[in-house]
Length: 179
Image (tube, rainbow, N blue to C red; front, side, top):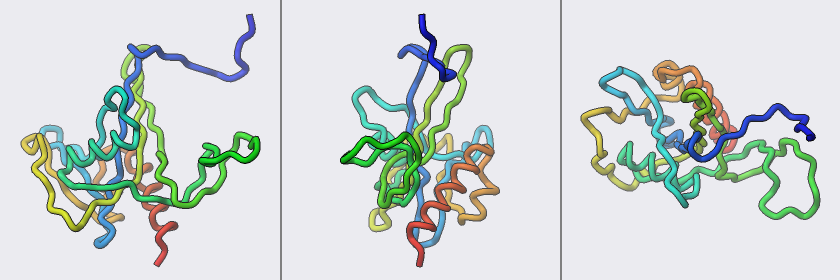
């Protein structure tokens, strides 16, 4: 029996859950939306589980809208990714390449939920529709929707991985939309 030369893990559908979320930008004021979980006094980003048959980017937009009340869309950014181009014209080596105007996940977080259980969280860059008013969120008693400047949000977020991810999102947006 041959073994893979790569260190690998494998999970059946009972052992993993997929989620998706978005770093929600308000470009006009250079702010990012966070959820203040009132019962734990934690500051986190909007995300949630992917439904069967739902595309990851659709999950991100649905969850961000449900949790923040803001209508949003994915914000195309310029970034490196190991994914091949939409149309492959030749066989390419597996390495990161630079693409413009992508609406792909820019970060994948993997959380270990317990022995042999994981949560995969795909993160997208999103921008709120500043023309529409926010809707009521489903759980406004549990959390408050708040906006912070690009610098303040890095101090406000509770978890280091979230701070690192948001820092990367800010870098992508600023490099893509230079004034």
